Length: 193
Image (cartoon, rainbow, N blue to C red; front, side, top):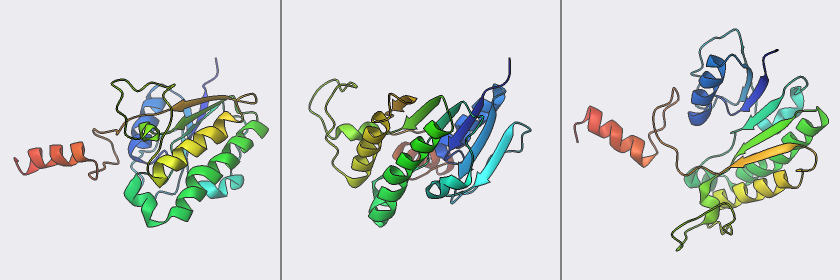
């Protein structure tokens, strides 16, 4: 059986750098596409190809021969989106539309998109489930919701999966200390408080 080939958009990021290492440990062939704004913490590996590229320029890369795209690339979190809302709409929504169209045209079988649990907004219900209505309250949340709708509009042409994680925390080769749990843990270890 030949090894599966996967593209990870945003593969040098906080989640991506952890995921890529796990895929490589399972012997997948992985191409990472990332702007590398926050560095590149991925170690060399014979099954890893890295491309430094903004996803808005995705036409410069071929998806042919790849089975799956995992789309993690975006302008993440409310403060970052608020710095440049136009850039956020371009990256988080418009580029996603171009990426999924290209994936369909180049015969990629699966498309996995990392959205956000924040698309639900602030809820009174005790349980929020996939069928709970989305009521995003920030521009970041809205870009995620609209990107989801764009992806769902292609559901008859590609197997698409949308994941809505809550705030992700923990260790990663590309650490983030703007996440409260990570910042508190760092202070506990290094400052003993």
